[in-house]
Image: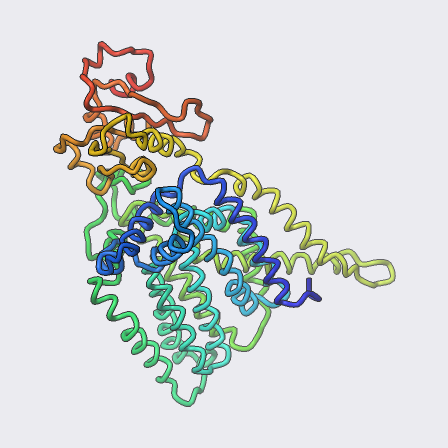
Length: 525
């Protein structure tokens, strides 16, 4: 690999990434639930609703804008066309991400392992599954990694010319996801701390110039959007994380588990640290974790290393503290929330593999004293082959296969012979509304459904009928005494959820009079 030009390596990596992401996008049973919100925002933008689409939506507009652009190029009507547009935008961002990710890995961990660091990111199941789904992470990481690369070059060389480039990409990163604000914040913090220690201090002609440029440019470029939006972001999770809104209710739908009434603050943060560690280990993947540690221990000295370590330490520490706070206030922290951390840790694992492979020739010397130089590339190939074999099941599994029943229910509802156009649907995640082209109620306004006589159909999966959360009792009350008119899918596998569809216009009967052999009757007892 060392004899192959960097340009060819990048092109090859982009081809591998494109093949994996397109294959996974084609094997999508249901797009992720957050994707429905991004698509709705993109539809508002396409209709010319600038205020509602750009400023008054829950999410930042970077990814919805790319969805709208992809849909304008591809055309089509209906859910399938918007689903394809959303995944095309995400996949394109994921493929283009190879370029800045390669540059970041090369600057941080060396030219020899940059290709391996990139390859491992795309072989890891979680990053690929997220970037092939209808989610904003690939678009965000594309801008973030470009900004990170420019910031690294600035810290290495000290040239102010790199700062505008870092801001040029940092601003769209923030306009895609609110955590993009971490990049300029980490740069300012690094510059402030650098001046305190001789090892990191640098005698720039004007030390205050980069700090002033970062602060003022961020205010000028991001400030108007923050004012128009009414804050750094309008997501409830962000407000809870920053402490400007109360914590999520103990039985919130977002929580990984209901909050115990007597749980202490210390207990909450213990679970938060544990949940964050699980999310990071899942997105990096268990086989790579030992090599991450080796990679950071095996880092070779280079100019500006102390400054870069400080910068990376601030980014990683800030990210991890935010994830712990997210879990403590909102009750969840999934692997996709730790992708920003993974973009640094996974390439570090490549350096760990390189360090281990580089020791093989020294251990296996020939009697003449010469070393077996071919062992290093052989070690690389063996490591990649073993990791690929471990990753294949996750890479080939259809996206969101467990929720296929919602899509089937939506297709049933799309047939207008089943009910008039004005009939509304109650569906917590909202998938059947999207695929069935129906209006109705989701978790955002769920409890309003009981007062609407047009709320005729209820789509609910088994776990939401038997669970301990408050909304589970709401679903039970909505459908009590009603037999389901359909059940999806007809044949379940061991990873799929059973989804029931109830028609509230049907006459109710006492639960005791219903067929006790049916699973839905047992659920409502």
